Image (cartoon, rainbow, N blue to C red; front, side, top):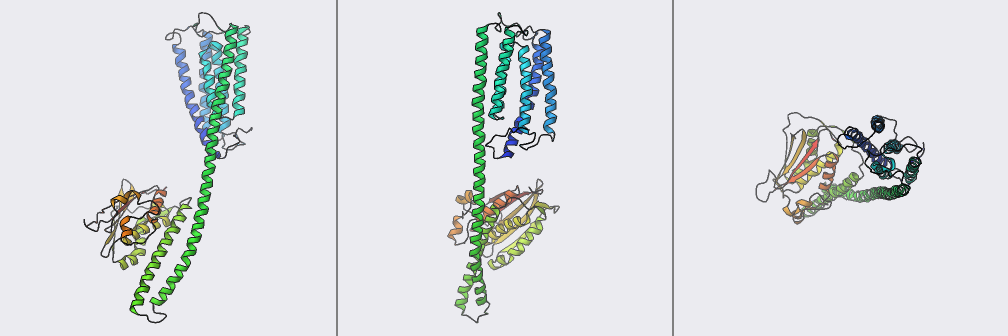
Length: 463
């Protein structure tokens, strides 16, 4: 099977999708052409008042029937497994060429029986050349164009010297033009120039456009590879930073546990504060590692999960943080049925751990955090509500951006990277979910405790 793939093709998948879509479009248009021909046959004498002979009408009817028959075959063919998306097999480009050849043969017959060089239908040759130039490689479409020009020249010449009969276009012309040598020469030359110029322009524009798409695809893949390298490098560096911080924590724990002997209350207080700071450092490092891992993610590891069990596990792990900060945790599930969902358990755990952790972190002693699960229109809805510091109105448009931190969080001295909510948003969107928020939350007391409510909507079926 001869190769029709353009030499500059890089993304074969895009090529097959592009040509396949145009092949289906050809088939649909061809049914409209058949209908138009049948309407033309029915109305040619009575409505248009043209005088077509029985031979001409029979030929046009035969062409219309032929187009209908082979278009039905093409329809079935397009749905079969015979067309392969492989360069060396019969592929979408070969199928496009096959359709074009069949159409050009039908069009040539139609033009001959409707006046030859006098027929208005010869402009459809240009239409076919324009469409073909958008799909087929240059050497093929130029070869077809030359064959058409020669074929029209031969038919016109044979009519002129009376080797084959001439059929007029319904007797419209007072004097025939096919036997006027000046008109024949000008018409054939003009036709040839129109065909070649049309092919040149359309093929060059289509080739340049396709080449640019291929270059952009290659550039995007290189950027993606660079991003992967960058994230892996980031993970390596950050992980190395984490190791000495964890070692410092161990030494601080030894002192606080009085394994090295008693220390004064003042020193113990300072060491306890240092221990809290190392916890914050570890949290920041884990956030950076989480977002790096998420950017390296290609496929979700979907499994059947029960969201209530996942939330309960996250709350249990966060209970020590809540107890230390003197924040109460509450969990409710108002669903009638605890249906499982298809999702990546580890990623969702990370997302809800971030949300619940933030609700505890950006709160004050005596605060509340409530997690509510419900069903809305067959989708899973999880609300994480708190009565903490809330989100200022001026910051709400940027809250999901990487490295952005709300102004009131910075003013009150809360440490963080501004990566947590960005990670959460990416995880939820990876699951075809939606995340939104409102501040004040339903737990707001109307004063300093404005609070924030994050609402996550997820499909049960997953991606």
